[in-house]
Figure 1 (tube, rainbow, N blue to C red):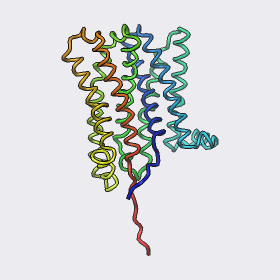
Figure 2: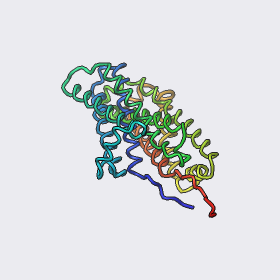
Figure 3: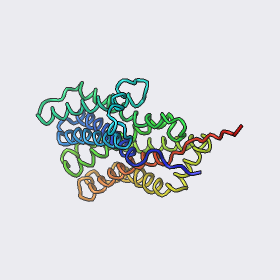
Figure 4: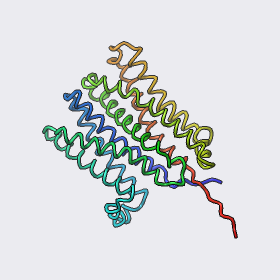
Length: 297
């Protein structure tokens, strides 16, 4: 039996953009603590985070058709603290308020208090975890109802956020990008952790009933196999890992400053962004529900 996905592209984009925005803010905070003179990169990260999360919220309201066409239903989310959606609204609203304050302070050339960055990072972590927990509310979908999904989406959020910041740095602020070598080294391990979490998620889901097995098979050898292996695994994970391995451990340090080196780094960061989106899209569209057969009495 075939099932149409209950959520499609808009929700996948929302999950991706929300995580990307949170990850960009976290990356900017760590860049500031280590290299406070990288002002262009920090301003981009904070402004991009605000835009990404804002667009994601519009996509969520448009697809769910609750906040956009029935605003009173959206207001109910602010008082139902037994709902994951309510906590998601709290985290997203808190993050956007803090990020907006940081953007205003930066563009008026005022100092951003360290405590404000810490609060923003806490909200960003909550947003990243929430994007995975949101899907887990649907208990009848084995691919979504997994404790591995929130940490997987959080790791992917930080990875894509760092990739976006590094991509901007290598293309628009190369003089500041050269001072963020430690970020590149830290980012190198995130796709590796992501591979471990994805493998564990698929392994556990495969043995979680027929629906879980069918979901995993559709990803590995079914209708989504090309997108999973070529788009997510090769372009989104293995390709960037290979590029960063060459840049960090094989190539000479001065190679990074050449046009070829910068194009390679930009390509690796772009691949991470593609993989981050495909991860969420595939998780959303490949999930199949558990079906109950009730015999007639």
